[in-house]
Image (cartoon, rainbow, N blue to C red):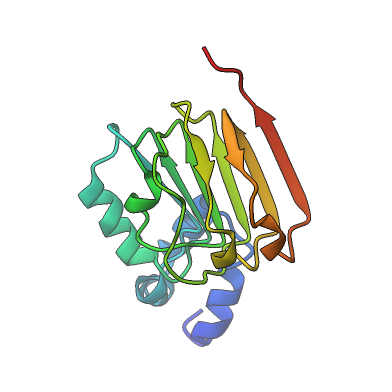
Length: 164
């Protein structure tokens, strides 16, 4: 195992889920050292108030090169809790008052917003998501103005909720 190059080890990790990757990293000291450099977790969740933000950030810093999906639950303006915009973003049971705007163009391919905990219209800065391919929203209202700027958008699922 020690003769494998780091690039090959990283390629192997692309086919493993987080649990398998963790087990693989524990089987050999050389592999463990390789994973310390870039991490192996592809999924990171911040679930307020169950999760300590400091622990979340430590996990992010360890795995920032491999993370593909962030899940943020039960927060106000969840995008402020994101350390970076990954390929897939999930906001669950959050309050979204401010526009979803990363302030720069990002590589995000999928955004999921489930059961927003308010009745405000969700506004997204579509021009900053040119690679967006999937959008799933279950909420009260969504502003579609400017969505044509997402030229790669293939799948939109919008489930409007009724107000009180």
